[in-house]
Length: 283
Ligand SMILES: NC(=O)c1ccc[n+]([C@@H]2O[C@H](COP(=O)([O-])OP(=O)(O)OC[C@H]3O[C@@H](n4cnc5c(N)ncnc54)[C@H](OP(=O)(O)O)[C@@H]3O)[C@@H](O)[C@H]2O)c1
Image (cartoon, rainbow, N blue to C red; front, side, top):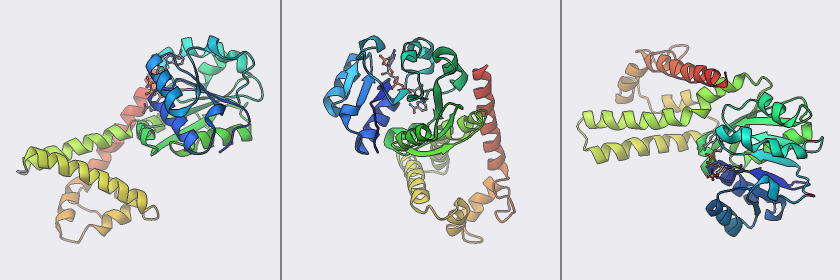
């Protein structure tokens, strides 16, 4: 991975720090990365552990800095105060990439000006361990080369997909953005069910957690197999798994749409509710 000019990261917290570590791990020299991070403890750690240049604020950046990309990785609540000073970098050779949840491209066009090339990406929390999935969308100013750069930089923390219609990011938020929490809740449900079935609490917790970890890793490694095939591989006709799945799937695991059933209906309602909330928050 290479960058012709410096990459400017605004916000070196959990997500920004994970991205930056991924860039360095993929060959971007630390000298080509500049971070704006006001938190002195985080700033000291980034500088010490990674050797990147860290500034406390936009005003502390070198006057002749000309970044190829400005990434905003601060909380959405502070974006209105954070973004405007970076207007000075707007030009055909600089792309702005935001990972702030729920902050639309139009927000950046308003505070940076319509000439700004803006990409908005929605990552999810497994990005912190390099196993996230992001969906990105850019405005008309973003060139193919800038889209490629954003793609490569986001790939440092997981898969990246692109959509042309920004409105789809509400559904993305409902599925992959909020999705890790649904899976963590499944672990809680499995553990509770284990206790109800007579297992000691500690053992039920450990089994529930290990089961989801292991199933996730199996899904990851068996990339060519669909979830349906993986499910069928562990389901003997008339066996124990079939008995359990019949409850979740409404009795007929062989039906044309196996996701339609009690659990499928619940998950559809769950994703729809999160997507609806994302729209409400966007105003
Ligand atoms: N964490 C996730 O899994 C996740 C998933 C999807 C999207 N996101 C998005 O990623 C963004 C960052 O989230 P996060 O979890 O990484 O938050 P975080 O850990 O709080 O990181 C944000 C960092 O920005 C710093 N900051 C505050 N004001 C600043 C300024 N004026 N200039 C530069 N840096 C400033 C904060 O410093 P202080 O500590 O001093 O405030 C903090 O270190 C959010 O917009 C969030 O919606 C995160």
